[in-house]
Length: 435
Image 1 (cartoon, rainbow, N blue to C red):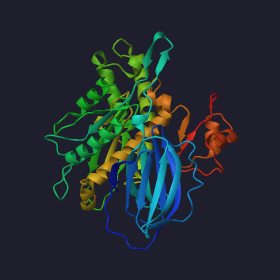
Image 2: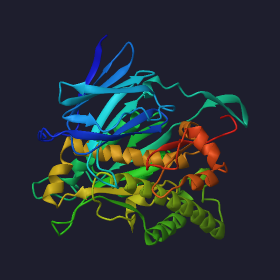
Image 3: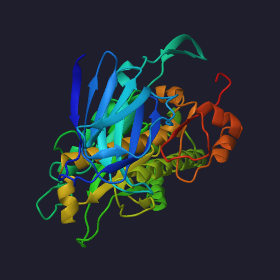
Image 4: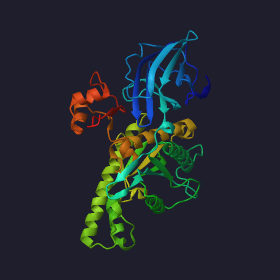
């Protein structure tokens, strides 16, 4: 038996009092290559975790904690976990052991009370390295077989070079904060099966806004995410925001594309405007922009939802503005203001590695949620997610059943559900003819 890894909790905090923390519940959710274990706690608690092999196990030690109830009722049928065991450790702490079906890499973090939940300890078990390689899929129009492609995500780091962006009271530059978060998001995306990141700016260089769009289109990006930090004349302004292109900005961009369509690159689906009459060119541009705007709004809603789990947001609705960097007519695009660098508290937080990692992880989760329902045909994600649905706020079992044209009892049976209680972020397997 060997110890493979040791990870301390990702967030640091002062030592807590000796009062016991109760583990009130254990919840599971899934992506195609990750099982997420959420421990609902009565208060904050420090933790440590490590893995053991032969057989594969994850050991989680939670300081000054105890189970309020057993974990025997947790449904493990669709997870990497074979069994959950727990027992007191050193008279004051709690040891939880997850028996696994296969090896997984670990990531853990704590979440403060938000969205109706209290304190939480989150443990992600990622088994991407053990996930089967993409299988070969037959092309209906070709006897040859081709691999499912990855979705391409353009990560645009705001400002850079001679343009520092906003500057905080302590001298923090927006361009540096944006690069730190973008680099972390790039690394997280690169680990996701079926996703490939493209960094629009990876060093301290200045890139014109139009060039950023051009680079994303050259890489045939499926999504474009621009990362920034906001500023305000009020030192009290705080929280993140998510923007999409306004109708005014879209109209101006449409006029620019139509005016220069002789030299314009192909639009969505490989359609060029160069040989089209004015009326048809206008119609094609309108269709392209409408589809892209709707997709951008869905992505922005998913992104805002996960950012709200980190703490208060500046605006609880998706904002619209005429940002030039969002004007690609065929790539769903959002701009994320990660916080207010003009707020001294947020300025300090935005400089920390742990908070930058939390922001990057939140954005990754937003991307995951978007692609769970909007993965382009022919991609690995479309194959992996064709029979899965991520629960969003306000959804019901009956509504989901109607959406997929199955009955509620089929949905219950497929997911071994004893009741209709659903949790945001939970993944449901959708019954198919093969299931």
